[in-house]
Length: 325
Ligand SMILES: [Zn+2]
Image (cartoon, rainbow, N blue to C red):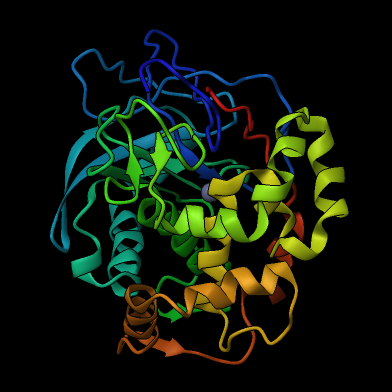
């Protein structure tokens, strides 16, 4: 894992004075420059040499990082920002409201791996990301959300796009944590990702076996400009174009569909099979029930965020898909 910034998922924030090795599971809508060659590293969170002025080259500006303790957050730092970002940084009430939405959506016992919460401004390009707080330790994660994308924070409504964003990002932590992935390994009998070697029973591997294994060689031979065609070719395998970005994004999308859609899909497509397979996982169905039956969930209307116009802004991400082994 050391110094491998394979971008399965990753987005590099370029920090002016401080190159870092963090990487991000990110989610972003379409209207940006996905295909820029800006894979790099850098990051966030809790290290000594942190430069407090942070702009990502994907348009985002990190505002504030919090430490998570149970349902509470307390500020670790504000980053040095100017102009319009100051108002977003100083809107702590909204930071807290965003965090409270997370706590209402994800039951506390499922949040033990979230140790830092970060608010950034995504310029309507970057919606959220997660990253291990320390490289190689998949048990402690930073959870970051875009303040400019946050809407309808008063209630949990699966028709809201931002609710979907939270679920998608949580799906990364769920599928990339230390119980799922061996970050330190000598041989791998599944497939390798930036974070390491997924265990056989890992959700990401289950998903991979359903819909990636037989086309993975082809996928690995693609450059990023060819992924959209790859998606079109195998459209019945994916819940969304974004899911075709790489196996990590796919399983996060499958999880988001699994949680936010009201009923299991009834079709036979590989995309449907992926979602259906999550219903066979007791841990996941219990989590789904807890999320959907929470008292705070007041808007379980038919339909979903798929009806949100924001949805149409999605496209293939730029996350690179090269493996490091
Ligand atoms: Zn993602």
